[in-house]
Amino acid sequence: MGVLTETRTLSASRGAGLHATQETLSRDALAALQLERLRVTLHNAWTHVPWQRARLEAAGLHPDAMRHLDDLQGLPFMVKNDLRDHYPFGLFARPVDALARIHASSGTTGKPTVVGYTAADLGRWADLMARSMYGIGVRPGDLVHNAYGYGLFTGGLGAHAGAERLGCPVVPMSGGGTERQVSLIVDFGARVLCATPSYALAIAEVAEHQGVDLRQSRLAFGLFGAEPWSAGMRDEVQARLGLKAFDIYGLSEIMGPGVACECECRNGLHGWEDHFLFELVDPESGAPVGEGEAGELVITTLTKEALPMLRYRTRDITRVTTQRCDCGRTHLRILRVTGRNDDMLIIRGVNVYPSQVEAVLMGRPGLAPHYQLVIERQGALDHLRVEIESLPGVAADRFDALAQDAQHHIKSLVGVTADVVVLAPGTLPRSQGKAVRVRDLRKAGPPR
Ligand code: DLL
Image (cartoon, rainbow, N blue to C red; front, top):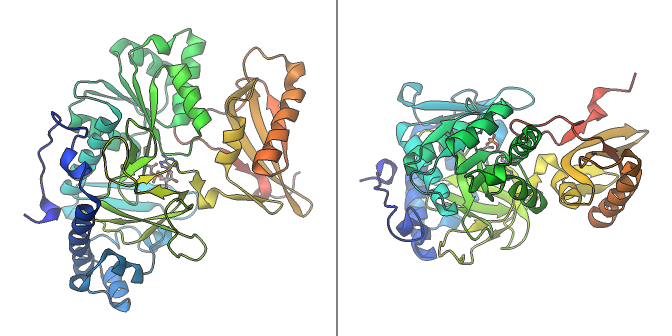
């Protein structure tokens, strides 16, 4: 049976992982499997995607001539614009009538990025989501409350299919209607909450306003991702929802949620190497960076039929380790994704990721975990203003002192000068999906 049509029996009964054999393959066995699957993927791309074939030919890479995984490094990277340039289906390796589903990400400018799946692709995606959920401790029968958005975004349907595959009943809530989310979490006895971390926090806040203590609910696991979040944010959502929060990573171009996920050790996210080849490169030069160094994640799909992606630059900055995890899984771990390359701000020559500012702000006395960075042009210089809410009950005459304190810590820990403005609770918009952390007023023209 070819690897692209493989079916697998899920055995949840033994071993640490749902797919214990695949999750604990030796690094050598994993590399051998990756090479075999890479050849199949290259064949698929070569045969069915003219643009990919031209690239492979130009790089002198015939699929059969692949001797080593490193041979792939001769191939130039793919970027998001390659998908946009071939909008909508130009890079698909299957005709539309052979697809089972299409997703798309909106993007702020221009055409959306469109991705497609065969039925077998959807099956493998469900498997990987089920594997990810099992790895954090979710078990068949646990009720999953899914507050990721359903629709073109991959979060909702991705988590949904994974939960069903694992044998969990799913409540397909999608985002929004937060008061109702709170009642159903309590009334149905959800064990698992799937949401962006910022929306999980919004749910906690609405529950508190309603006088509902979700810490007393049956919630035990949070599977949070789709946006960067800091360790402080993890502490916050855990304390307010009374669950253990886990980080899950993915992107629609590669699959959707479940490309990588934390295990019970919560010491990095296992990137599922039997289905993806991960590289880490210097974002400037494109050269490989060593283990433990920060770089941009580049991913090649190894089992996708409909949309094989070869050396896709994710723009996500992280670090990687191949050291064996205490859980026994051998698949590499990507460390917390601190932000996208595109999110990086340059404020008076200092490079800043919003998540760095978040890491400083979380847990500072008197401050709530609701913030936004506002970038303005002042004369020839960019200026950063950090707007953050106070905790409820903090007297307004303390706001200035809290702002001074936060400003000082941002300067000393991130190295950037910011004006901090402390606002009353409830002032800033709440997210129902991915939080908008940056308001860039530089492109809005001069103030009127
Ligand atoms: O956000 C897929 C997803 C859904 C992942 C639900 C996890 C949970 P896209 O909308 O295509 O797909 O956005 C992908 O979101 O390149 C990262 O920049 C960011 N991202 C996703 N997960 C994380 C995470 C989904 N755990 C983009 N930490 C990615 C930080 C994340 N950033």
